[in-house]
Image 1 (cartoon, rainbow, N blue to C red):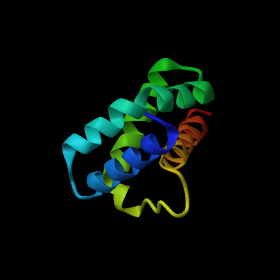
Image 2: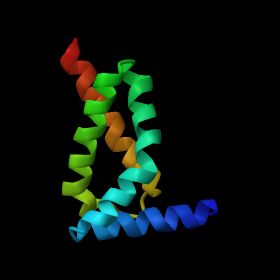
Image 3: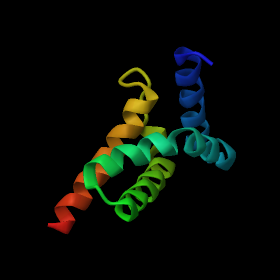
Length: 95
């Protein structure tokens, strides 16, 4: 699958997630969780904390998928920004 196909698939999965499709949400999680957890881990340098951040981020994704605007950002950019904000919140909380 090429990059455009992957982006198209992620956009569709986010749209279906916004409609409450749990299978689409699970698939979105399964194709992005390793990368997103890596982003969190690089920021907090603690595996347990990065796992918590990933979980919190996916709860937020579930609740806010309808706010995704494909004309404003690529799907992975949007998902990564959610992870980054959750990680920054965690870093601030742990200080």
